[in-house]
Length: 104
Image (cartoon, rainbow, N blue to C red; front, top):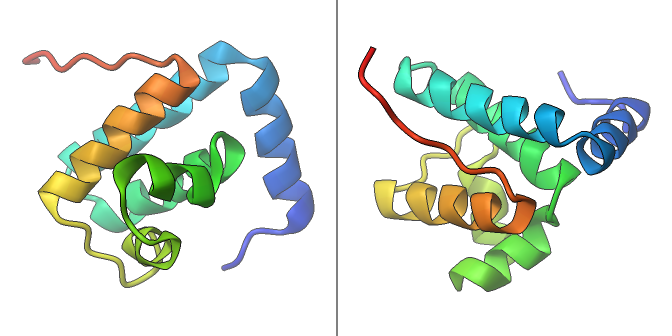
């Protein structure tokens, strides 16, 4: 189900003004990926990218064509581990969110 423009704008506005929301959104995306819910994790990462730095800026930072990066997080996307970690690293730098992994 595609997101409406109102929803996207609401998420973008909230992400811009609320650092805790940004941190929770990125954390949720990575937790979903680690829990093997890859499709949901990609969807949340796509929302996070759209709400923060955007695909054009992200693609430039990781040295990939913007269409390739958009495909990685589309419905049939399958980013390599190298690309996925490059994206997560750039998102952390660009948004000031720092994630840490710990054993539970």
